[in-house]
Length: 494
Length: 36
Image (cartoon, rainbow over all chains, first blue to last red; front, side, top):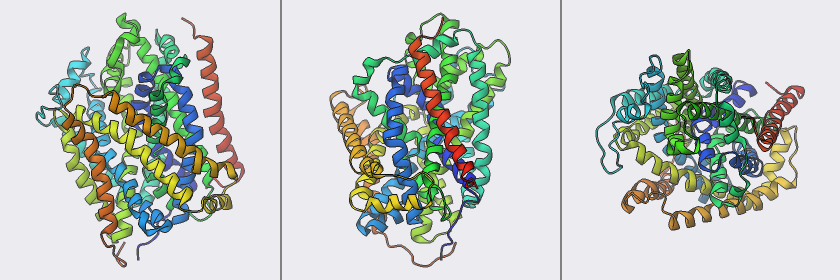
């Protein structure tokens, strides 16, 4: 029989859940999405998304995992055997996210080393292009970038090393990898705020542009950001909650995890925008004029390093702690994306945790190789666009519909209330059954319409969008049904 | 350059909700003697 694993303490669970939720997304993605959606105005839909969908869904996932005492395939199967595929879909999505997420971490790993002597110098843009072996087009694959490949091997090895021993080791790792980057981020924020031009950057970050609130894309981005950032709809929180002991406070944990994650995003915005303001002043160009240099990977690997190089003193020190913070933020999220599928394989086929983890890390590494090539950056952006905007929202919707309508949501509410200090009322049922699904359907339909009308990648051929965006999503759904149909083992070893 | 009033309001609002809320729920966890 497979032995049930448990967290060492409530603290270990909270740290692991925060570690999973807080990742590159908070530092690398949040400021980018915030900039891309009107600066300060984005904070309003972001907060709305947190309280109307993020926290209620987090409570749902904690309750499901704790009630089912298992990974998503087991939890969905407990509702009805025919829904097991939805559980597999839920664990396959983070696995796919991990494939490209780890590549970004590999970039951070190399940059952490480069920051010792600020190797990017004053031309971070050409350095980044050279570092990636960027071919300038998604259609020209190019060669494999050796520094990225070495970083990739290091990160995948770390993930395996942390996961193969089970949740006890995870608990020990997150006790370090959650507080350390938070402290480093605070140091970076203080340094950023003392720079000239920082206030202008912060003003850009916080001043709300209310006209943006009428733009559906801003709301779509806010909900996608919450799903991505809270590690929602990825089976991670369900899996982590399944390792909780019987008497665990689920509701309070959900509030702590959600607010810690959102608080880190909010703080990261200060660290990033204060430095963006400094860069704007130093180079004599407006923040708006920075254009795509403030978006996506460019923000982290071009704009921020450029600003670091301009610092009057201790530039290498602040460069190092920036990338160490990114790496330590990211590693918890990365291994949490692999844990659900490893634990699910362990549950269904009774293969050992070490073996399941080794298989998943090897597969993940091999798939990651496509993003280590000269076209990796472009391919990564397309895949991330489709996974974040469609995959995560769809799974969130499935969770609400299956646990809200195919199962008595009252049972889950009662289950959470049995051990939680803060009691859930009927309002939570209404949120899970009606309000959140309606929001998610609107978000999903708007995204589909928007992508059909306004092609987000007009310069890319249609077949590339199909291959890197639509085909992976369809393949994941197909694979979910196949995994459901494959017969599991009833007995095995741990 | 000074921060606009609307930015200061967002700063206070964000800080109170996020960090105040976090402190409150951590406090409740400790108070409930369930932080173990």
